[in-house]
Image 1 (cartoon, one colour):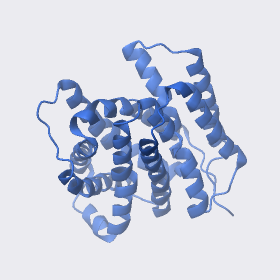
Image 2 (cartoon, one colour):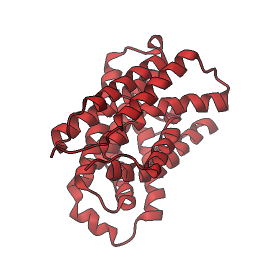
Image 3 (cartoon, rainbow, N blue to C red):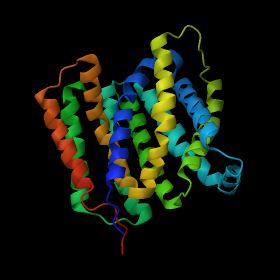
Image 4 (tube, one colour):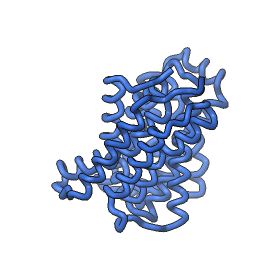
Length: 291
């Protein structure tokens, strides 16, 4: 069955893109102060408290016990591992480079959807992803990219984890998306905690800017954002959900223009047009399994 996004799905897609459009900037601000592991841990703790208090009830723990292994896999591949990969990359490459690499997430979702879910290969969908990624490179400017191999590979692994986790979540066909989002971030918090031994967390002397960045990442970019994220994966499939990664820089540009009065160039607009064209082509038919 085709899964073309509805109007509500598009609202979720655009809303998540708008929220996550600022994430790389806040990651860049906070990571040098609290470390890659420290930032992942803090945003997960905040998100776990928020979602756990609001959405988890006593009967949800039976879900936890029954599906422990799948939940651990989701917590690792959808949260803990990609968060760490991008936080580590942020120490060595700029936000533009991370945005482009994160924009490759639809390619991984496309590949894993065919390999694992048996989705049909559609040239128009693949072309849309490639056009969107090309538009993303034009948007940020090739000269703005950092070519530091290990951080680039780390960020690429983060994008791959996002792609395969979306496929896995879709395959599980989760019913209670709110509880699943809450349990997932709690598990991810537990998984990342032991690594604080190697990179101890130090919260002394953090300024207001860093504290705000951590809170924003935890509450909005992690906690609240994961509710529509899980709903989208269930409703429209991994490929259509993953195109958010291409739209994120576009909204980052808009936020920078509105809040920081940064200039929008013709090259950026040209890249935006290609990104939007790619997104529309990717969702022209919707995701579909082989007959």
